[in-house]
Image (cartoon, rainbow, N blue to C red; front, side, top):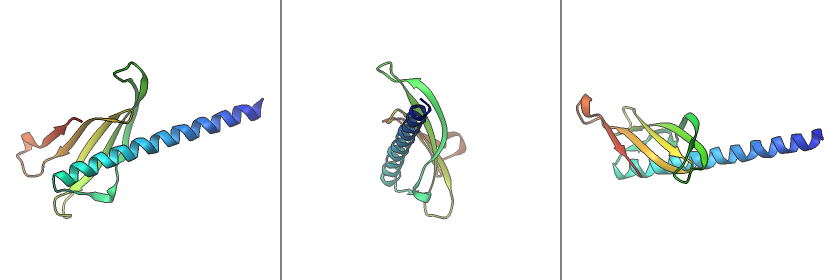
Length: 112
């Protein structure tokens, strides 16, 4: 009985890990496309997990909602922050600081 329980725990942990890797790769690809289209450099070529929640998607299914942070640069000299939110594997919101604008208008939000 204990063997089966350990097997189920290992399989569940493996599936959760695979799901997290797939979501992170989805976020990274979306951020890389956005940075490329805006002629920005995605620094460290990665996104960092900020938070995870359970939420319902548009079909009513419970899925993981994840928030990631990333850093980008105009020329490699200064770092600026951005964030992306996923619901399941779909991008819900992307926020990129705009270093060229006034402080009250520093954020651009993109929905996909």
